[in-house]
Image (spheres, rainbow, N blue to C red):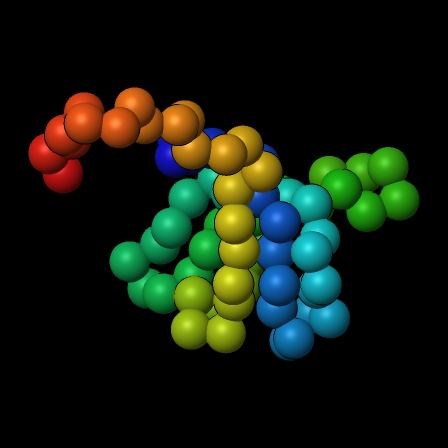
Length: 71
């Protein structure tokens, strides 16, 4: 996963249910910095990490069986 990256956001505080956004940064203060398009305009949004779920729009590459990756 790379930042910035396209994500789908789920956050009850802002009634987001799979909202398309761009993850710009993760702050050490506990917030995701997102850019969301609303009515054709781009808006910055800060949502708390503890109350937000998201997944990256681009899937992880398929790893060949038998190929070991050290993380």
